[in-house]
Each structure stands twice: as structure tokens, then as C-alpha cells.
Image (tube, rainbow, N blue to C red; front, side):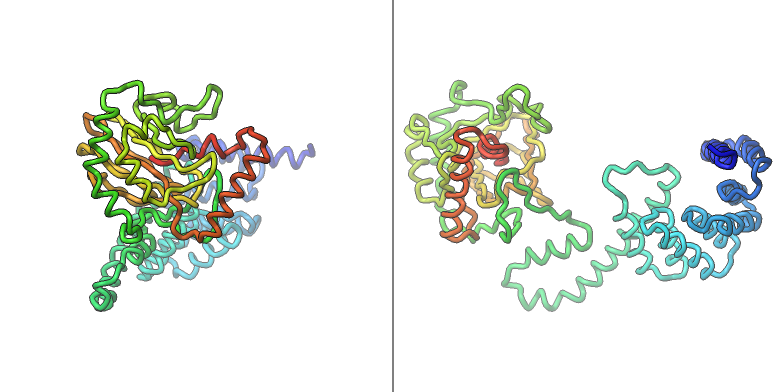
Length: 442
């Protein structure tokens, strides 16, 4: 290492130590360290920037600006120097164009520089451009990577950004309500739920979820969370048979512990992730009527009228995989964690049979309560989870049906492709296939 490089490294080390002292509120120690560095290289840009930041914090914006102008003259490629200079311009009450120019230089060097993005939004706010500021705050918040650890010093600015975005969204919502009122009334007899979700997601009230199947994704199918019941002509008959199905379940299986098995049953050594707590647990247990396309004759014989009702339903039929039909029992004070199913070529139907208060079900951004006799048809390759917060078990009949947007030809192709995948592996379970085909129904 050359003497010059060694000195540069020494100064950078001193400045970084001084910065930690400043952030910790130890200004005297920071000044001592910076004075030490100044004796070695008084015009080092990192030193000038650190001194400028210290003067800004101490309230001497004029001295800060002079130091920071020298810093950017020495090194114009560091966005932090330009950001500090922008702050000095604001503290001095100088024309906002000066601050804007410095911020633009910082963002030209690093377009995702979060403090510079927040200050640019703040400048727009100070100039009375509240709508543009809200959009800039939104963009700044969107630039934050998931799980990012942010400095405590940024928290007030981030909180203000969140509040500014919320206030703007509320104002925009009120404005749009007025704009849409006449049109909504004109189409009062038509379904508007999808448009409502569009506006909710635009205004940040609703998170957008997409299908993420663990096995087979079929493109260009609608990514609905819950499907409208009107789309299924046979659903009325299924709901109308709720008392019959419940009576058969209670007569055949209530109190028969041996009939039930844990729904989650991964072998030892499997990566359990969210299933660790429920693996091999009877807190979520099931009784199968069909399993992976195979009839469980003993159980079907105990529920003949239920079997007859299901014979009129377009159950998924994929050899070795579907249909799967079962009574699902979620124990008191139990939760099924967020997860996704295996394919969007199917939908899942829940017929609630025994539902105490406090049982909820979320698919994507929408949470509903089960209600006895009111079936839910949902897209299980969209993230979903369930809760039973009551003191007694919840019982639901669950079965899978073909996605109604698949054509007969597409269903046939899916059947053949899945069978082909199975044949290719010669009886070995392909990753993501049979081991996962039963997961995700909630």
C-alpha cells in the first residue's frame, strides 16, 4: 500500500469513528476525532463532509454550506455530500432551486437514495405542491427493499411520508367518490366488486396477490380470490344439503378418533417451514372421502347422501391426484398458517358444517368468516390462511373442482401432462407434485 493510500484509509477510518460518535450524541468526541483527521489532510472530501454535517447539527448552516461546497468540489460523485449540501441550503433559507439542484445531483448519482428521495418530497411539500409531494413520498416508500433495516434517524421522515401518502389517498378517494357517484348509480344493477378492488389496490387499501402454485401454473386464468357464487349453478343444491351432510358426518365420525388423521404429515427430514407446528398434529385433522383421485369406499359408504350430492359437482379428475374430498376439522384455538396450493387449474370449495364464532379465513387481501351452509369457492394458489379462535372445533367439507375458465380441451391436456410427469419419474414422487397436491385447501 502506498503512503497516500495508507493516509486515505486512516482518514476514512477516523471519519467513520467520528460519525458513529456524532450519531451517538458524542459531539465533543466527534470534533476531537475530526480535528485529528484535519491535521493529516485538511481538504479530504470525507472530512469536509463530516465537518459540514456536524456544523449542520450544531446549527451553523453557513459554516456547513462552505465546508460542503468544498467537499463536492473535491468529490462530486458522492450523493451523501450533495444531500448534506441541499440540507444546508434549506437551513439557510436560500432559494429552493439551490436545494433542488443539489438533490437532483444526489439522485442522478443514486436514484434510490432514500434520504434524498424523502427530502425531495419534503421540498415539494414546502413549495405547496402537496399532491406531487405525496406521489414522491409514495415512490420513496416503494424504494425500500423488504426486510430492510433502516437507521433510527430516518424514522420521523418515514412516518411523515406514510401520513402524507395516507392523507393524499383519503383526499383522492373522496374526490373519486364524487366523480363516480353518477356512473355507479347508472349501473346499480351490475356487479362492481372487481372495480372496487381495483380502486382499493390503487389507493393502497388492498394488497395485490398473485397465484403462486407450488406445482403447476396455468397462465391467463383470472386471479380471483373468492369466486362469485352465481358462477356455479350447482352450488345452491350443495348448500341446500348442508343439514344432510352435517348429519351424516356427525353420525359416522363424531367421536370416532381412529377415523381422523393429521392433514399435515411430512416425513422426518422434510423442510417444514410454516408447517412445523402442525406437522403430524391432530389440531388440523381430516377424514377423507376421496384421496388423490381414489375413493375411500368405507367412508363413502357411511355418507351415501353426501356422495350422491358430490356426484353432481364438477370435481377435478386427474388420475393419481384428484379429486380429493374430506371433512376438515380445525381444533379450538388453532391456526393454519399462510400458504399456497399446488395449481390454479382447480378451485377449492368449502361447505361450512360446524362453525362457532371466531372462525376466519383469508385468501389474498380478503378475509371472511365461515357461515354454516354458505359455501366459499376460492383460488387456493393465492396465499391463504385460517383461524379458529373459538373454544370448540370447526368442521368444513372441502373438495376441489375444475377451474371453470379451463376449456374441456385444456382440462384433457392438464390430465395428460400430469400423468406424463408422473410416468416420467417412473413412480418416484416428482418434486412439488404428489407430495404437495394435497396441500393448500385450508
